[in-house]
Length: 89
Image (cartoon, rainbow, N blue to C red; front, side, top):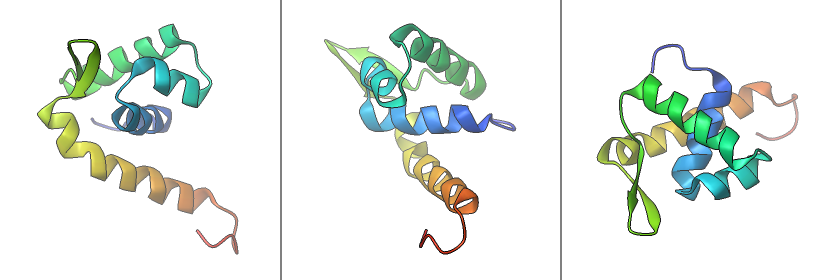
């Protein structure tokens, strides 16, 4: 992803953690359709499906699995940068 929107980065982290559009939407306070559109944007940005249906559940693609930890670290670093001084982050 070139110059990713930070909101997309947060959404990607939640989607990779939850492995569910509906669960990620609930966690972020979005509608399922809004999260589905976000997943489409992420797929376009990465050139990878990220999550694919396997029976009744969604599973990470190999690419999504490979970027999961880096995504989590990037979100954590962003949260640390935005935290007020003295919060311990």
